[in-house]
Amino acid sequence: MHVVVNAAMSADGKLSSRRREQVRISGEADFDRMDALRAASDAVVVGVGTVLADDPHLTVKDDERRQRRLDAGKSPSPARVVVDSRGRTPTDSAVLDDAAETYVCVTEDAPTENVDALAERATVVPAGTGRVDLREAFAALESAGLESIMVEGGGELIFSLVEADLVDELRVFVGPRLIGGRDAPTVADGEGYVADFPELELEAVERLDGGVVLSWRIESDAAV
Ligand SMILES: NC(=O)C1=CN([C@@H]2O[C@H](COP(=O)(O)OP(=O)(O)OC[C@H]3O[C@@H](n4cnc5c(N)ncnc54)[C@H](O)[C@@H]3O)[C@@H](O)[C@H]2O)C=CC1
Ligand SMILES: Nc1nc(O)c(N)c(N[C@@H]2O[C@H](COP(=O)(O)O)[C@@H](O)[C@H]2O)n1
Image 1 (cartoon, rainbow, N blue to C red):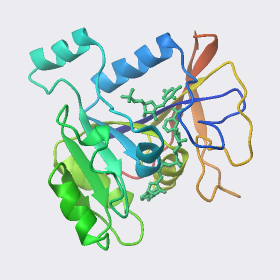
Image 2 (image 1 turned 90 degrees about the vertical axis):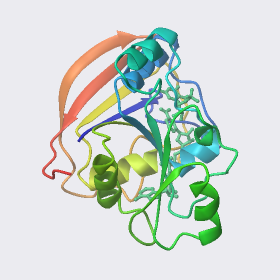
Image 3 (image 1 turned 135 degrees about the vertical axis):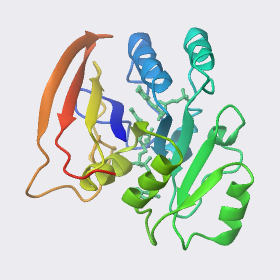
Image 4 (image 1 turned 120 degrees about the horizontal axis):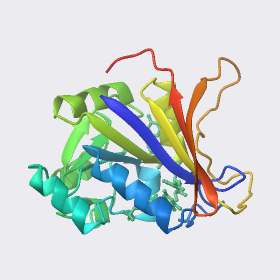
């Protein structure tokens, strides 16, 4: 399994504002780069915080890319995965439509009524208790044939994935605006580190949309 995190942040490192509503940080070229990465992936992963904030669709937008996937015997868009401990994904969410296959990773103690409702529209993957056990969930996704994984956010999920040693690459578009706010989400939220900070190796720098795309490799010890 190969896991790439792709996100867009302001020049001061924020994924959105303190209201946690979607903020357009990327320009057309960066959204197109994101679409190409989606098209090259087997699955696109987000946390339920992102579903509740943005109601994303997570499909491939470009017709030619969708056609190329069909020509290769694949579905037009990759599978969508929501990491959602309690099964809070609303049943009318865009990720639960029939445009692509969807997996919802929940905990074993998630409320049964939520799990049952989600199971009508998605494949439910139980993993862990309290919070989704990401290593167990990703191992289940890999067993389902999902090898090439793109994670779009948000900051809570990205931090946990790094902490679980599941991330191979981090690609961040740094856009030409400031958002500010001590409570605004960043690329890596969660508890944060106080020591043994994960080390990154810079692989590429590309100017785009008045900002820059930074591509980093993360040393990962653990295999899934
Ligand atoms: N600029 C960008 O590229 C993007 C921005 N966003 C923004 O990020 C914000 C949402 O991010 P967050 O609030 O951080 O939510 P998130 O999308 O990271 O979801 C976090 C939630 O996932 C669930 N979860 C289950 N197991 C977990 C585990 N082991 N570790 C972590 N979370 C687990 C929990 O319910 C947790 O609250 C929104 O404001 C959205 O607009 C989201 C994606 C991309
Ligand atoms: N890469 C990027 N740049 C931005 O400026 C953003 N606001 C986001 N947000 C994420 O983009 C995805 C939207 O998906 P759909 O267009 O609905 O398919 C979703 O993951 C947002 O959280 N990303």
